[in-house]
View 1 (tube, rainbow, N blue to C red):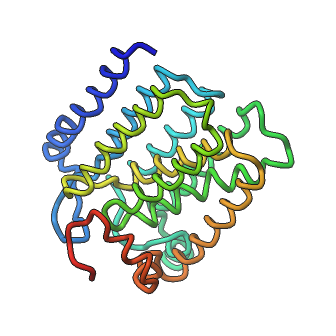
View 2: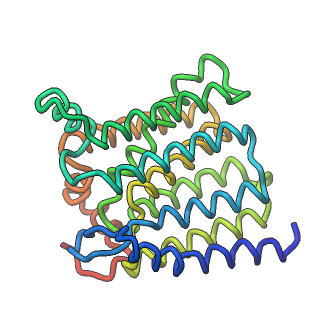
Length: 269
């Protein structure tokens, strides 16, 4: 891999955020963060640009299926960011709102789109055997949902993504090039800086996209036992998210609360 390509795509990522940020304020693509400050919810656009750069240089297996999946996830999140409201929350909340108020929410639209993108992309994947289909589908649906639930404080999804990256490296070590590793580190550095300085947030579009990337890599490049374990963890996290919130659970566990504040430039709450 020529060094100029790494420099080119890295420069695109680094320079994309100032442009995206200015456009976000121009079109009011902003939202209140947990500090009640208006900031753009468009870090997901930067991540989507990073994905496009990546597949240009290193096309993954089942490229068309991958594009349908991540494109569907990002679109579902973007619709919820633009047209959604702060309440109701969670799958249960949206379903209750539908049955009690007889009103369709953008959250339900997101759920349908994520399910459709997951199912359609899985139908186009070549190397999934029938016995693994349910686990793969669970990963593709649950991972974006969990990341959306995590994304209520800066760097939470970033840390979750970092943990996955380190685990994936154990399975991919020797088969993933140095160029790819450098590119991923640069993207994560830009993403981490934006969130750490509270200049922008992932938004539902970015959270869903990052969760989808993790699910796709797990589905394609990790053994079945790890996929089953990860599915179990995601189900457990979904349970906590639907019962109350993942934030409440983190606040009750001291070690998680400590880790949660790493890089946040604030005292423990």
